Image (cartoon, rainbow, N blue to C red):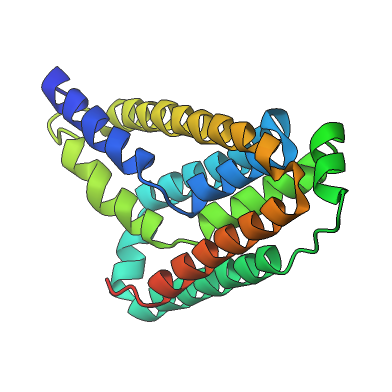
Length: 209
């Protein structure tokens, strides 16, 4: 792989990862509601799902999905349904007077396992990531050179950039925590983030390959 090709991949991946999406929103919400350290579990869940999808795509599942559109549609609709569920759950989350402040002060998050699983489900809920990996990564691999080392380099590069943006979003969410100590602010925060998740669900349900 030529160095110029790698730098092109870095540039494209940097902006693709930076674009707000379900993963980044979830990481930011985790940082805002539970603190930075618990948000790491959410990051780990998102990263694990993305890496699994990249590896599966490399194994040829992306081509299978393109050959059988019904499989892609099933994954797409299941992912949209989960995001809609998450959005409604967030919107309707009860916030009582003093509850938001107590949570912010005590930093009592849900279990790391629960945050990890939620991150995995949100990241895996978008089947377009498989097709993205199948169509995007091969463009940067030189067929005249061994493919495995090149794929490993691209995967490592993608991981570093993606995780870096996770930290940026989680840190931004943590800075919002001071404003979420008021129940009224937490209520609107839940409604806005819940609405955005539902918006992502609608957009995903309307996606066509």
